[in-house]
Image 1 (cartoon, rainbow, N blue to C red):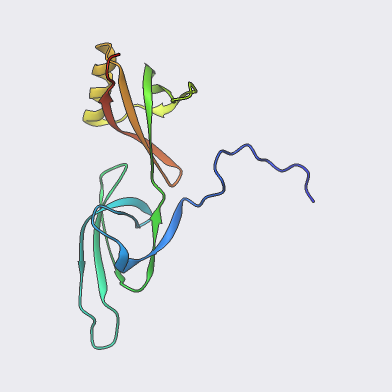
Image 2: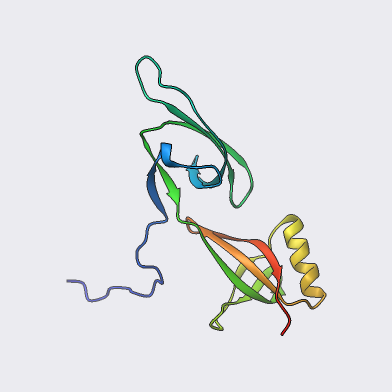
Length: 155
């Protein structure tokens, strides 16, 4: 047996995706379309044909880039669904386009890029104004990004 096992990772070996029957997916749920984690925005089921399965047509938006993806699969087949986690962090600084974030237990991480577009601008302006803000970070399939900002209540 190998005595040099590495147990430093924080997860319990959980997969980044799990299978789910196509017909049990719902609008606003998550699914993997074309290899990307997406939120389902539109879904329709066609009737069974003469020889076959009912088909499910799904339209989803990538949860990180908001790019639109479409796919059609038989309703009885399994599709991959991403394990999506959302964690809130307190913003403590911005350095060279990277966020300094603190968890509830006081750990600091500085490896997350400032979001692009309007969200990034809002985070930057709130920080420069001296507001206490919480940043919501979404994790899926070994990817992560800041997806929301909210003001913290003053004590």
